[in-house]
Length: 166
Image (cartoon, rainbow, N blue to C red):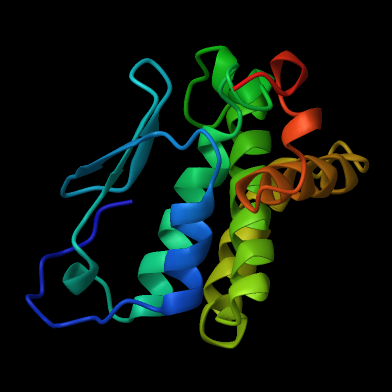
């Protein structure tokens, strides 16, 4: 996700910051012009908050990338992260669906969903359309997204990868 630099001041949201800082076994963070998760370095890249239209948009994007990071083998582990996938492949599509659902769930916990729901719904629809052939995919993705959100919130450390070893 590329975000143009605006230079505007976008203040942090305390509940979102609590969620991010409370994530167990968090990935490394880097500032970058794009938002991404890189499994090989277990790091999340994010543009500056001021690059986003709102703080809610920033945290929604950050929650999306953190949800991807839960797929790393040292957390929950997920095929869409542990194996290299090409853009548009079924596995890539599944992982994007999981990440956006996880971001929406975390947005709900943080209380920012009213400001992010329309964008999340549009993004989810684009990936659901790719996966229409598999009617069970939405249920699978929602289950994986819930596991990821619970991990980020520190609710399922004992269920996380490696029997919860951190």
